[in-house]
Length: 160
Image (cartoon, rainbow, N blue to C red):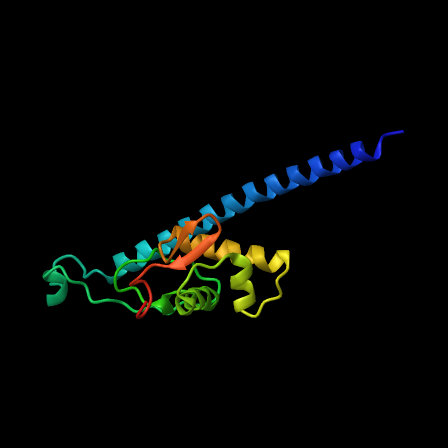
């Protein structure tokens, strides 16, 4: 008869393997998604260019394209932060995260952020917040000063 510890170790090993497989599948899905987003953006840029032989509007000739203001919709991709990009280019959940951090003016961990957002501070909700703030940090909207501690860089949002 197998020992209880042996059974637990076997189940732990199976759970770890499942998590690793799901993480790999998630990474593949995100990569495919980002390729589609890039393709859509590229097509939009190509379609926005004037046909060959026609003059571009004066602003484009001078090398200054007029800024396009795109409002985000829930579930949309997080764009990389760049000068002049408005907070409303982020999906509402991401906007709220950046606003909470900007208003606090200090570093917060994911549990504090979940509580500040009015979410129940349970593992599932905290991990959802962690996923979003990690993505925001990777795209330059936030900074992870210390592991697990996030804040908004000065000048990224409004008056911060």
